[in-house]
Structure formats: structure tokens, C-alpha cells
Length: 233
Image (tube, rainbow, N blue to C red; front, side, top):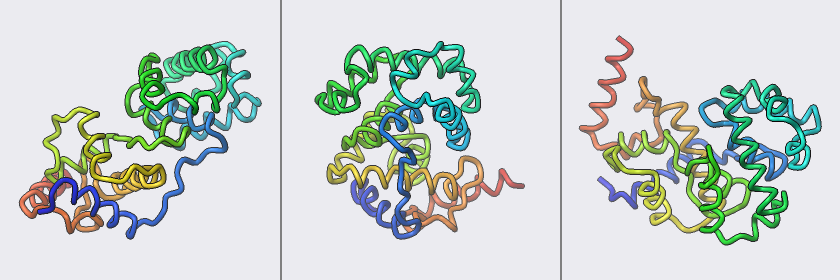
């Protein structure tokens, strides 16, 4: 069984060879990435795309335009993303800080030291570590690894973690095992999402089809596969 660091490295190569480059994040501007990162909380990307198209159709997908519309109008436009009232509040909270602290400027935001920037994002109501790190990585080009539910599920099933670890512990595991590289972190996170959706599913894992199957300790693989068969029976 490989060490945790070896697992992290080898898993990337297996996923990349199986699925190829994922070309994330699908957006036309860093600001669109930020809006998408907030809207994608607790929903799928297709719903986010519909909400973003609504904003684009109204010419509102830029900071000054969004600042000047009401929270109610914003909520109506992002309705396809779900939890639209909550997400409208979160977008407005972000915009308030973005424009007060960085003058609504992505370039000024990018010039902020990374730890200070991450701390500022985490202080915004409704922005947790995953959303903050998605903004840092995909919108601002910072080498920060994004941890999500797929990441935790895959690592737990492979015995790398026991499931009790917090977000920062898992993030540090990846960042301590890999070179600090924006493109690498971008691709790796996207590949984890891909394998999580196609193979390492929550209740019906397809271990036999998974590129990471060769890294599975046999006892754990038997347990996961049995659980999957039990769910299907």
C-alpha cells in the first residue's frame, strides 16, 4: 500500500491518463468564476450556468452592475441555482467587501498577499473554505488546493483518511505532497470531481471501472463493493 503522499501523486497520474485535461473553470472572466463559485454551493453546474446566463442576458455580470441592482432582483435572476434568496445575500455580501476593500477591481484583489486574501474571503458571511479556495485557485490564479466532498469520499474509501479530518488537514495533505502549481491543482481538483461523479459515487461506487482501483487495498475494496451491491439489491 503506498504512503499517503505517494497515493496523492499516483492518483493524479492515473486520473489524468484516464480522463485527460478537464479545462476548468468554464467562465469568460475571473469575476464570472467568483459568481459561479458562490452560486454552485449545494447545486449542480448546469443550474449555475442557467443563472449566469440570466445575468449575462441583462448585462449584469460585472461588479458595478450587480452592486446597483436590488437583492430581490438578483434573487429572481439567479433562481435556477437554488437557494436563490440566500445566494443573493451572499453575493451582495461579497460585492460589499469586494468594492469597499478592492474598489471592485480583480487586479487589486490579486495584488493582496495570499494569506491576507484568504482570511478576508473567509470573513465574508456564506463563504467557507471550499468557496474561498475555489476563488483563489480558479479566479485569482493562486496555488491553493480545493477540497470538496468528492475528495473526502475518495480518500476515506482508500484508507488515506478516516473521515474525521478537517478541511485544512486535507488541504495540507495535498499541498504537502505536490508541487505548488496552479495548473496542477486546477486539473487535479477537476479530475477528482470527474471520478467522483462517474465512479466513486456515494451509494453505488463503480470500483471495477475506476482508474484508482489499482490503488485500492483489497480489504477496503471488498467492503466498498459489497456496500454498493447491497444498496442495489
